[in-house]
Image 1 (cartoon, rainbow, N blue to C red):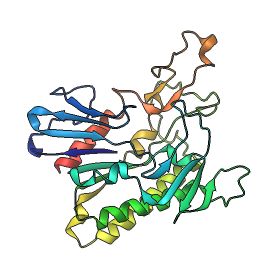
Image 2 (cartoon, helix red, strand yellow):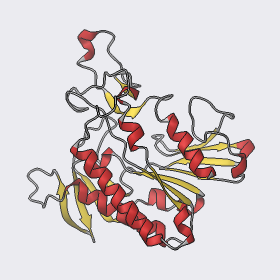
Image 3 (cartoon, helix red, strand yellow):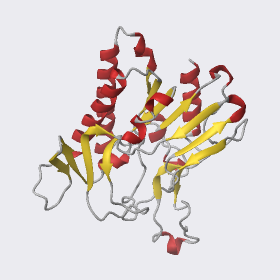
Image 4 (cartoon, rainbow, N blue to C red):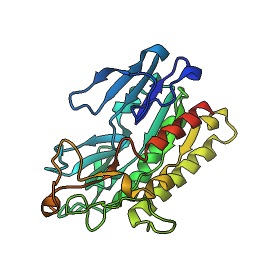
Length: 282
């Protein structure tokens, strides 16, 4: 999640986030121990950008190390929003909210203080509710909070961004070696992408319908990057992710874990910055 506080919107720099070009070097005014939550300030514009780490948007207990190795199932509370972002909500004038691949992870689901089910919990004797249930309930909770809140920032809901692993996943040798964008009709949408995107559009449209006739409707905007993203299998970090070593020859390439989810900078997501500024200034 990104949030920013404006003071002089008409004088904003062309791109508010660190990218391949900029008109001012922002000052980092805060970061947590793991650099997951950060804040930058553009002094001459009196303009602050915050990165808030809330991967599920709802309250979560995660037992993973930095390499994604888990010692226990994630515990998710479907009826409690993550205070990491709700506690700061009223300080932001513009907010970008998005979900991601974290919703596909193995997890136990809680409501009203009791376990109600799970996703991919082996030998737990729990009802399999699936990630679709989790994502739908989460977005309903998020949009309900936005609509009912007295504070009315401009909200950009950014859509799902697909990965481009081929010949496996991140944990079993999957890679992304393409060096050019997909051609028309070359990309084949997978089940996860179809379900997640369908859920996003359905819940966003329901939120829009609730606001119809209200002046707050124009403050809720869909930032649809899905079509732009799935066409760019060539834009990922691949084997060159830092701080991890990458293979220097083909012989060792198979042993290197590829990152085919996150994007190179500069890269395809620079276009997202242009979209943000167009939507903000409109």
